Image (tube, helix red, strand yellow):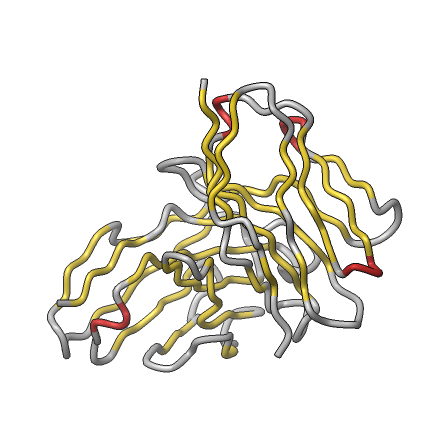
Length: 114
Length: 114
């Protein structure tokens, strides 16, 4: 069955370190890709999305992600993390079944030490 | 402008009891979704609606029913609660399908079934 995988369950970094969170999906067709973030005690909010075009997309708060179709990946990156980036990050994909059915990965908890 | 509001925020049920979770959005969105979030499993889609009077099954629909009698409201019902339904439930809405535009999430409902 089509699925979304996030291999990093918990990542701990120091401030100013670089971040890369992995996301892979299993489906050979056209998909739309998203990263959502859930800060402690808050609702999920969109960081960035990819539909088509330039595979390197930029989102809010200095985050970016690169879509590599040949690897079925959509990894999230940030050159220098801050303590305020501590949150849970979810990769999401639509198009695995239909474009209304958004499937999420298990999430990666990021802890940034001051 | 409240966005997406979920009622209640917390609830404890006994096995076999029934309850309804209410999701209300004030953004005139056509699409609404119910997810459950469990540790290590991310968000899983329960049911969704592409417009008033419509509903569709997601990834984990068993044990739940939904109704979308009014465009702004999406109700999730548990007819006979089971401990396996202990979870955090999130409602979301979007102007187009979740695959086309940002989904806006509520704050979540933490449900415990004992």
